[in-house]
Length: 247
Image (cartoon, rainbow, N blue to C red; front, side, top):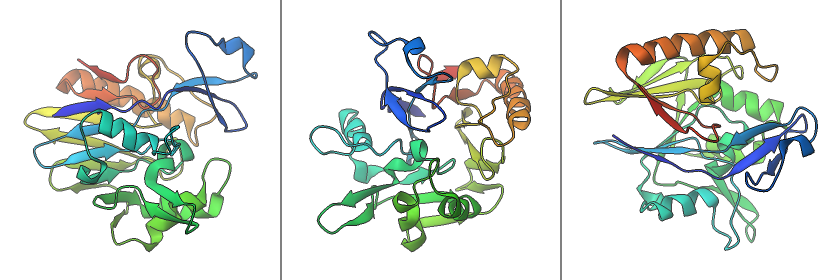
């Protein structure tokens, strides 16, 4: 399997839930508001023998040319956005789900950013996102999922096409899920915001911003032990230095 990180850049985020660009070479974290976290925003492409998978969709920002950033990142890596076959969503927080759709300013409506792909979403997470709203969710960006035939609604744990497992954890958010992709004796694990950074895997860390911080910590310890046993590859969505890690 081939893994391609699609970095959208480094940001700081505080209690306001706003993502502020951060230049690693020029900015200083201490100059940001108290409690600011330094994070990367980094969806992933995983190319398998069956699919071109997209794991989460980034912030949904557009570049100076008006192109959706995740589309540009795919193109820069030789992938046409229309070639994505499956979009695997961990949850619908705005930094993971912003690229699900694009807004047509003329028609004043949203369209799926990957109309050729099938989107996999926990139904309860979708319902929760629409109900909860700002600042963590932006309902208008994800509402189109409820109108589309491209969506397969998930309920709990299961397997997709015999090689992609999903597990509802309810750790970072009430209906957060993680994915394990197994093919040809390779194992790739995407923990999204349950396991966002390498450092959190190696240390007992409980975050106040998690729905169930204790469960997050316990799951990270469990996954880390399994990773050492089966030599799995970890994908870290918010890690500035280590997007991919394997044993």
